[in-house]
Length: 228
Image (tube, rainbow, N blue to C red; front, side, top):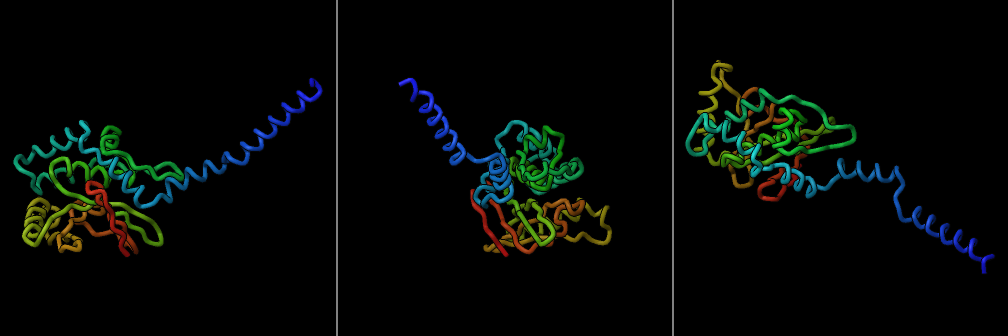
């Protein structure tokens, strides 16, 4: 029996080794899958990432938003929003994600890190701070043949609210734009206005990123819309 014991052990070990090769991914496959997760995740996965990153109930995020909003005390208003906008756009430092990764930081992380990150992180932080004080936002993921971009939009409402926003913007930023302020909106299927909060200018309602197609994410409502 001893003559057959060692060969049997070797045979079993060989079977286990072959099975691991067949059923376990190689190192290259692991890296590929990880890269696919970050770059080619479905829109539903990205929606989940945005939703988790918008941590409105986080103490750091909430306190920061309240301290900005209290400069214009009272119920939710556009002056509070623009105080957040001014604070964030003046403090933010753009830094890319690691190569081959598209990470989305939570708002609290970006605040604690010293307001640093890429366009996704900026959009998330902007949207989160505004929602902390009662506003409604969405995040646009836009792409063209050259690049991609992400930015937040603020829900304004109907024509009357649009006029109110224009009045507040012109009054607040008129010193910087003596000849008039170009303010850019988009509209949804219901005809409501949304104000661009990208960092393409030094005032809310800057020029939009030129895109060929967009995915509109509503993290708080757990939905998205794809447009071309």
